[in-house]
Length: 596
Image (cartoon, rainbow, N blue to C red; front, top):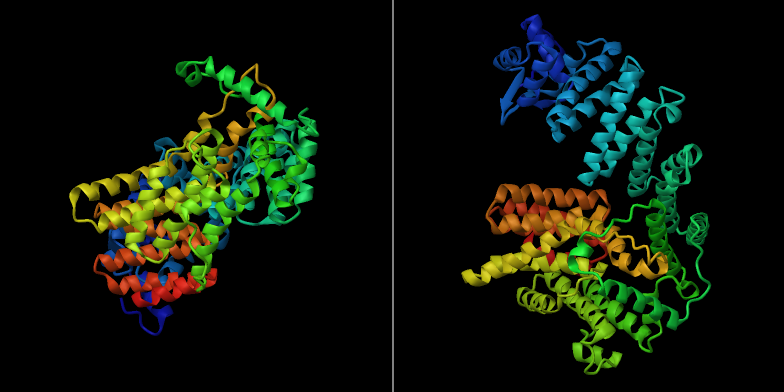
């Protein structure tokens, strides 16, 4: 639509030609921004009992609005501003509040998450000044709580924090909200603190946790605030303070840490636990009582955090926390195991990414000989160590081959990875091994013409995707209580790998979106793949994972290139190029230039 130079005169003349009913409908539409779904306007029309659809169709006929793909949109931003200005400034908040509440009740009744987010955003545009009484303030605070939880589930911690902060602002209309609405206040503050931690808003986090610690009615209600404070202290470099807070809290929970644990005591505890478990059938284990004692559950979480904190400051050996780790530490080849398993394979990949590829690739035979495994690597504790070694080595090969688009090497590394991927535990290396092996599987599948091979690789990719998707479920099933096994230092290793992996769950959406996008690419569901690639890019960007943002852009670029849309692929490759350079992977960035 062409807008003349004298915009003000044009808009005035346009609105003068419209009936009062049409202008009123435009005013309503303007509250939702430049455009809105027709289905949403239909719901609102029904709830506020005001004609909207027919008058807005009239506005379409007068070229004030456009109508396309299920949406109504203003033909120019000045038209939207003009419609919005028809409301008196002091009345705007009331309109936003009214429309948001009308949609919010529908969203709750029909369990429509998307409508809920739209409704609560609309209410928050109105703000606390639009609330008519205390009862409505509580209703709106609860709606913000629900919207914030939905946003957290979508890994949108910035939006979630905004919803929680708005919810708190409505409660603060009452000075005594901690007394009158304690449970709602506690949940809003706890979740807002979690989001502030994820968003690196440390000052806000401190204010929120201070409020919780001051107003909590019991020690149990302080658990979440203590947990995020420990994480904040670790992340901000004040690890000794984190250690001291953990020890003080454990003492308050009557969980005193032993000054030393002899190896024979560790073995004795493990033997007792094994004996107890051996007497239980599979059915009994599956129906075992869940651990419901929040103090015990929190103590386990703190012990895991303590082990990580002591590792950061190099004092892990001074605190005997986890028997399984201590047993490994006693082994004569522990230092070699850590260095060769975790450092050398990834060091070579890192050197290649920055343009220095002189480091030799670690060989399986050399590594096993260095550890002295001999012929016993498949037995007992050595089997776990050997599996960790192989997972790390193959993960390094997988990631390197995928990064530099070396198809044959990627396929070989994936075959090797799947050959050892049979252990039940899941470390961070194995988590990302699943991610990269899934990406490689979908890539190999697209390059194979043989139907049997194509099916095999797609199946592998789907299995990797499903594994990551189900991590949160698996984390909740290993949660049991045994009256004969109350010593936390005995059961801690059963929780370790599950709790450790759950630390990655808030960040795992980018990985999951990418795997889902690659799956849809293989299924030729291109429209869905486009949406998922963009979701992966947005998630990694929000969490400031530059390397994953680069990878997501690159894979999206290959998607558009392979589907015949070269011009669009260049846009994504260019963004990947910038992000790889920002990450420091200049050699990888340089390799991308052939696609730009």
